[in-house]
Image (cartoon, rainbow, N blue to C red):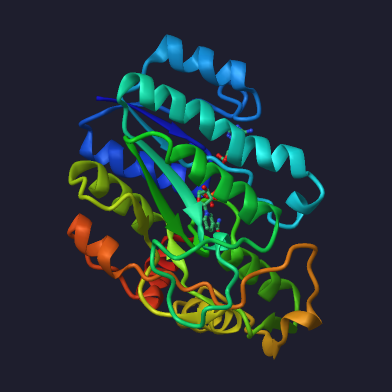
Length: 287
Ligand SMILES: NC(=O)c1ccc[n+]([C@@H]2O[C@H](COP(=O)([O-])OP(=O)(O)OC[C@H]3O[C@@H](n4cnc5c(N)ncnc54)[C@H](OP(=O)(O)O)[C@@H]3O)[C@@H](O)[C@H]2O)c1
C-alpha cells in the first residue's frame, strides 16, 4: 500500500515513519512542506493526482497556537481548507484519511474527560482551524479523526525539551498549574494510528493521549525529577506554580482538556501507557 504521510518532519510524522520502517510493509510518501504545501490547494491536488496514495495520514498542521491569533488566514488555510482537498481525494478514490486533531477543539469548561462526541467549542484560532479541518475531513465516509493532546518527542520542539533547555539556563522557573491535560508521547500516538489502520473499528472520532492527568507544572516537575535521576540534568531549577493569568499568552488555552480515550483504545486493541512511563522512555532516548 502507498501511504502519504504529511508533516513528515514534525514530531508525529517522524514517529509514523520510524514505526513503518521497522514494519517495512508499506511504501511511504513523505513530501516536504515545500513539495506538498497545505497552503496551496493546486499543489495538493497535482501531487495527489500524480502520486495516487492508497491512504492519507494528515500529520501536518499549523501548530503555532499563539501566532495563529494573528496569522489567521494561514492557520485556517493549512488546518482547515487544505483538508477539504484531502477529503475530496478521499471521497473520489475511496481512500482512508486519518486527520489528526487536538484537545484545543474544546473550551476546557467541562471538568470531566471529553468523550469523542462532545460538542466542540474552540477558544482560539488554532482550535477553530483544527475544528474546521475535522468538519472538512468528515465529509468523506473514509475519514477518521484522531484527537490528541500535549504532544512531545525526542524529535522536534516541545514542552519537555523547552523545560530541559531552560533548566540549563535558569535557577528558577515558573510554570502554570491551573491548566490540566494529558501528555502524549508522539511514539505512542504513531503506534495508535498504525494500529487504527490495521484494525478499523466503527468509531469515526477517536481520542488518543497517554494515560493519566497532570498540570503543566506537574509535567515540568516530572521532567526535572526523571531527567535528574537519569543523570541527564546537572541543575534542577526551583519550580514555582503560577496561575494562567500570571503568564498571559495571545491565545486562550482550555483549563481542562483531558480526553476520554477509553473507548478509542479499546476499539484499536491497545492499552494506553501511563504518561510518566512514556516520559521516561522519551528521556532515555535524549542525548
Ligand atoms: N504539538 C502538540 O502539542 C499537539 C497537541 C494536540 C494536537 N496536535 C496535532 O498533532 C498533529 C501533529 O503535530 P506535531 O506536534 O507532530 O506537529 P509539529 O511537530 O509542529 O510539525 C508540524 C508539521 O507540519 C508541517 N507543516 C506546517 N505547515 C505546513 C504546510 N503549509 N504544508 C505542509 N506541511 C506543513 C511541518 O513541516 P515543516 O517542518 O516543513 O514546516 C511539520 O512537518 C497536528 O495535527 C497537530 O495539530 C499537536
